[in-house]
Image (cartoon, rainbow, N blue to C red; front, side, top):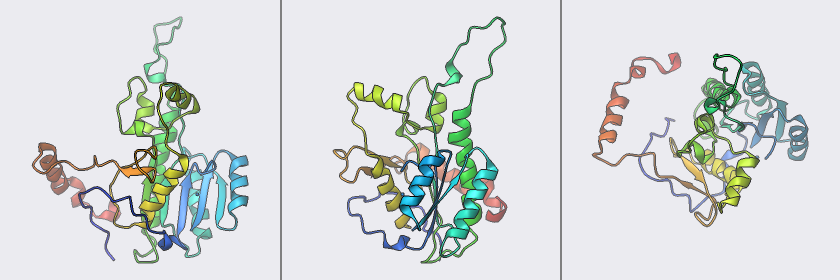
Amino acid sequence: MAYAAYQKGVVDYKNVAPPTNLEGKGVVITGGAKGMAHVTFGDLDEESGTKLEAELAPNAKFIRCDVTSWEDQLAMFKLALSSSPRKSIDVVVANAGISGPDDAFTIEVTDTDEPVKPQLKIVNIDLLGVMYTMKLARHYFVKHPLDASHDRCLIVNASLVGFLDVPGIPQYVATTILSPTVQEYCKSKGIVFAEAKDAAGAWIKIASDPSINGRSFGIVPRDAAPQGYMDLGKDDYADGDYLDELQDILLRTSHRLAVKAESQ
C-alpha cells in the first residue's frame, strides 16, 4: 500500500464521515493534558494529565513530558507503543507550545555595553520540541506496515499567527501558541475566536482521511466554516506562476532525492 501522493486542490471539509477507521490505532499527543483510538499524551501539567487519564481510561495513558527533553519524548513514544492494541504508533499530533515575553526585540538597560543573551524558551518548546516529535514519529511510523489497519499521520498544531504576519513577536510567529493575555487583548479589539474542540475535529478529519497530505487547515469561528475548521487553500501556487515553476524544479532536483529515505 503506497503513500497517497500529494495532490493540488482544497480539501472538502463540509461532509465529514464518522472516523471509524481510527479504531485500534495508536495516537501520541504532546501537550495534551488540557484537552482527545488509544491515546498516549504527555505534558508538564501532571495534575491535569492524571485527571484526564482517569476520565478517558482505559483508552488513554498520561506521562509527564518536557518536550524539550529528547529522553522524555522517547519515553512517551515507548509508552504509546506498548499501550497500543496493535503495538504501533499511527497518528502523532505535535501540539505542545507556550507563549510569553519575546526577548528578541527587548532592549535591556545595563551597566555595561554588553548585549544580553535572549531567553529562547519559546523556540525551544515550540520549535525544537516539535522537531523531536517529528523525528520520533518518523522512527516509529516505519516500524509497522502501511496498510488498512495502520497509518503514518503527523499533524503539527499551531496558531494562525504561524501562518500570518504579526510584528514584534518573532519567536511567537516562528513557533506559535496563543496565551490568555493575548486572547483578552484580541477580544477587546472585537476579534472572534474559534473553539478549541474544533481543533480536535480537524485532527480527526486529517487522521481519518489518508488522502489528506501537506495541507494547512485553519481552526476558525463557525460563522466562517460550519465545522469550525477549513483548508486555508494557500498551499498551492497557481499553474504557470513563477513560484510554481520554481517549486517543481526544487522537487525534481533536491539533493535529498539522491539519498535513500531510510538514510535521511
